[in-house]
Image (cartoon, rainbow, N blue to C red):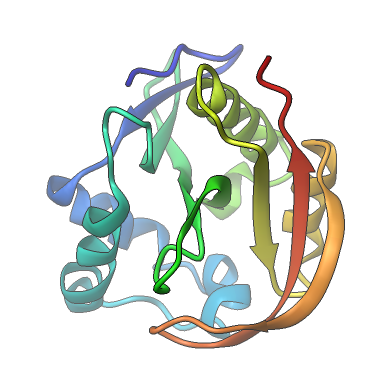
Length: 181
């Protein structure tokens, strides 16, 4: 699947060869604040944990994976947007409800890139599918990510303990219904 450029951005589905780019964005403690308290990710963690997780749900045909987001004029790498089935790492992933997530370099914050990218990727991936919902998770005090969720048209669903093989966290879940037809 290809995703058309948005007003300011272009997109490319990342793969195992993108370990360095995935590592780069995780070196800023501000980027990592709401993910693990601000600890940079090691390249070993990227290669041994992050890449295998990405490869588990990556599906080029369906558009699932991590999409690199770049400035379409300068080609500058700004961040990425993840899209995969909700509850993917459980025994019953929900392919009718796709989860969006994002990380952007701190220098890009406050410029609307995350919202623009997430909407473009969401719209491309859900077109011509039977997806019924799109969701996003964040820790409750990550107000910037919650702001993106709201700008995308998502509404609060619940606060709960999100269980994940790489670490549980207190999450807020936002969601929107999809009208494909």
